[in-house]
Length: 151
Image: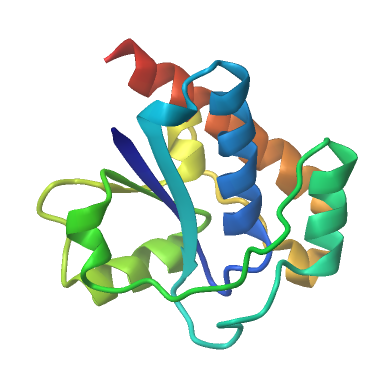
């Protein structure tokens, strides 16, 4: 089983979008039994809160339901539980490495690095641009999925 955890600051916008976009992709390929996909926050600010309404609406526009998802915090023990940690920006990477105390198995990466870019997924909480965030996350998920299925 391939275990993937998406990471962002609050776990109410970008990382749940990544979680549910990738879940839809693997479901459409009939591979859902081969994956465990979730998301978490590096901060405690939004723990227990549902997906932010504009993010939920953007997913819904693409036929994706995220009902029941609430923000959870990344824990040090998650390092052993997952194979890949896909972070939305460099600050998320830094905080993830702080929580884990390092990355000896090279499991932590920027999502868009799977597209061959060191670009960050801009936080739509601040920009309000959920269209671009969705497009970037979807592109990153496609590249990630293509590369790990080739292994």
